[in-house]
Image (cartoon, rainbow, N blue to C red; front, side, top):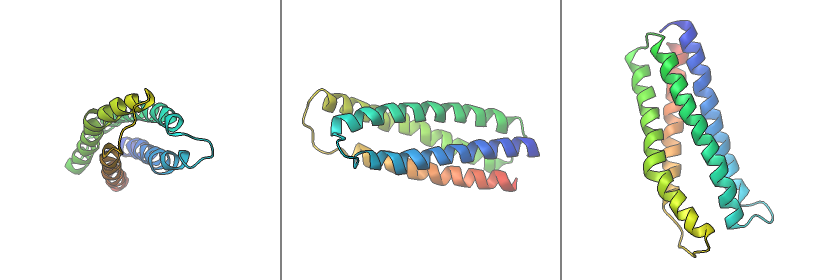
Length: 142
């Protein structure tokens, strides 16, 4: 892989990794511990933050695909990029959409039991973090 493409793709990968770690594993759980933050307020904030994060993740995926494609990548880089893109796609389509529908109901005043959807979302975040770390390290050594 050419050095410029590997360096740019590595920077984009670690930027993405940092955003996921900061938002999913720091901001999201802490917001509900802040004084005065109710479930509806926390859900409203969370929806806005994760909508923005997911849009940036989609843009980073596109930028990585372009950058890596231009750099004559080895098969390991292609496989890891495909894994990250697939994880994001499944997370957004199969997990985030139902969570959004559920939060709509909670925000409308329905009293619902705890959801397992968040567990699935976190599982995808953990898998995505692992894949991004592997991709970044592979790009750094490519």
